[in-house]
Amino acid sequence: MQNGIIVNNRTISVMLRCITCDAPARAMVKGAKLYSGYAGCDKCTQRGKWLGRMTFAEVENLEMRTDVSFRNQSQPEHHHGVSPFCELPVDMVLQFPIDYMHQCCLGVMRKLLLSWLRGKPAVRMSANNASEISRRLIELRRCVPKLFSRKPRSLLEVDRWKATEFRLFLLYIGKLVLKGILRDELYNNFLILSVAMSFLVSPSLARVHHEYAQQLLVCFVSQCRALYGDEFLTYNVHSLVHIAAEVDRFGSLDNCSAFMFENYLQQLKRMVRSGRKPLTQLVKRLSEMPPSEVVGHQATNDLLISAKAPNNAYILHNCKCCEVLSCSDNVSGDEASHQLPDLFTCRVYEHVQPLFTTPCDSRIMETFVVSSTDASIVELERSKFRAQAIMVEVKKSQYCFMAVLHDL
Image (cartoon, rainbow, N blue to C red; front, side, top):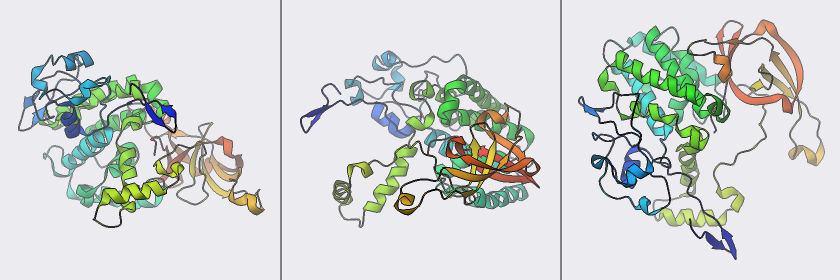
């Protein structure tokens, strides 16, 4: 970090951007108490309360930790010792962001689903309602485009859901499958969380709406206390009041989440052929690859446009919705394998309506309801497309379009 790395007589500078960990790993590398401790929050100095589990009930007027207070160990009960990271010029609070993959998707969203399925009688849904939600989830499998690595599964398999499945439910399909089944106050509470997290995972929306997302998350946690009881406010739920602050530093939650690392683990796993010396196998396979292929995920400005359902739903730059029906074949010969089509025949839905208006108008996050009676066939250039979407039929001749907000 001070002198860089010299490779082929060229000095490459090194900067530590952030340390992405789940909560137990973050406590370990910082030499701090676990989230189950009374001083277990690594963002504020609130003292927890034991209610069969450690809970953190306060959501406002919190005293925040700083790099100086952490290094000086101003709250001694928060520390186990001195972290080796303290020897580096890093911020011991801000550069250890909350990972929403573990704490929100695998944490809060999973906790909500289990509360509705197996929780207190006051919030638990009936077996028939759970079966109806499972049926809706299975039906949505044909609507989820291939850029999502996993299709929806039944609630009977919720104990085996992966983080990407909880994210799909939280940001997109949960608002559809729960509507009309979950009690209104529980559904509206979930909608607050879904909207807030949708703002924070989108790079464009996070810049504009992160303060509003913070207000929504504080409201969500406060409502959870009334709906689910004080014991529901565990560390994962409490961390939601701090998570909006991460976008001030990193731009969006996906820029500091564990999703990119978890996705790359799949590529590494395919390189291991046997259980003998797996690390050696990885080093050899990586050394054989061209440098351009070693990095697991590379952003591209080219939106891949498909004419095959369910991958053919898109949001246009003018906030209209469309289905791609066919691609033009304006290239030929050897060029065809290197060039993407530039003209597409589409069914464009002219008039868009919000799916919901509380806690905000859903059109802000590009979630629309359209009618097939307002559609027209139009030829569009590639430059007109803004984002891929999930398209779901909600009623006869009515469709819901939900823009894909998160970075993949």
